[in-house]
Image 1 (cartoon, rainbow, N blue to C red):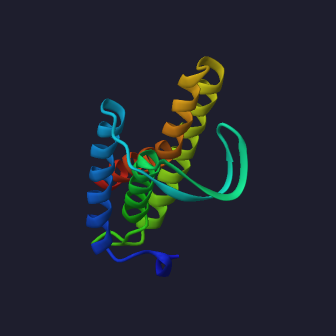
Image 2: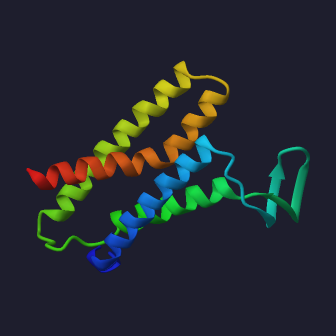
Length: 143
């Protein structure tokens, strides 16, 4: 599996994208940050159902999510400077713990959060698996 890992140099770019995504998230939440442009659409069910078309929309939220997703991808799938025989064991355990915690948070969200709050939690769920993984992996590396 190590041959599928990215070089360690990509990890810095990933952290930079995560930082940029966090700043963009703050702008998006606390200001009226908007980027309106035409986008291609496979399916949309916002005001009306549309297939295979295009329309103008605010793409700021997509920009934020793509920036964060790309950053997490680069950090998680880049090799460490010192890869050893225990790295894959740490990665596997961290992934299992992250999936477990992410599932618990999702379960509790389904039971206790409703309406727009639940939609917000679904967006958080997209990234919480990555965040949990990084927390568990780097904690295991420090031990």
